[in-house]
Image (cartoon, rainbow, N blue to C red):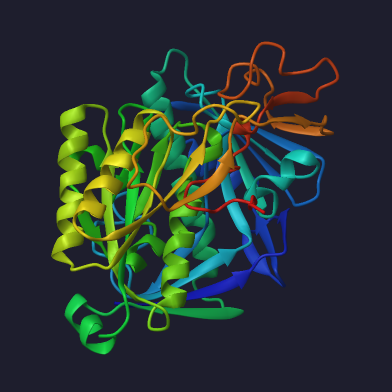
Length: 426
């Protein structure tokens, strides 16, 4: 499969009488977006606000972040199973508003929501302090169940990202990147001397408010399977979960999966990128055993030399991560895991809830328990009402002057387990 991504670089976002992209600026019509969102009878209000890099702005509580894209040539449409039919995507041409993002916020859905600061200490830790954000602050009807509210928020974000993506349909990209993935046999013939490497992408699927969707299907309802890496770039995987903000994979990160990006960059040079295996993170032991068995079975079937395994979440999913690692290694496939750590505020606690000697090659996204001080911002988009109860905060986290003392856990994507974050080790 061959996919061309056409980047239209967005350097600013402004309100305008007409939604359009002009000279690197994304202009959005506030009323049109509100009307689009409020088609959902579960929602009573939608405030649209803008947040730009460097501004004294705090967004909280954050639900999801989505990059606007549009399929301009080829089969299907972006976000299949949600905004378009379930035709297989991942080939043709897709245009991207690079540098723009849709952020959904509002009343807290689950306690594991997050904060995006556009400047100050918090901005150092989230990649979304660098994007020009169209923020939707959405409120539900009274007594709406949390999972129904989450669904409405998810769909609202995808609707607006699709609406904004359409603005790029007829634009000439500033840059075009080409991603081409051969079939398994063709790749083997083409690169017989390079190590065969696949990516095992673990998807959060622990139940209500802990879901990820593949072509609109909840990942926990599927066995471990394969997906073409270019399908991710067309929004085949969508976030629907409320895991801790620091290691959540927002839809934006699935669209820009950095492991896939790097494997493509090294394909045909240092390695043969065989493909992507997607597996879930269910709650019960039998489900974990089944899914990890299938992960290892597919790695053996593909005759891999190496596998990279990334996680989402922590605690219970640590067991899935280690089971995948142990079983894949047992098939003779060298394995690297990507995770983050909950090692306590002083860093002296056990980093993962599970461990094994087979997990001897680890990439860490950082310690989510590190305590940080976030200064007061001049403007808050959303509400500070939930700062003390979101994961990583505590009673008294919100200071009288409007600053926040909390764990790094509260910052969206601060310790992201696909590596889409701002931390490094030295």
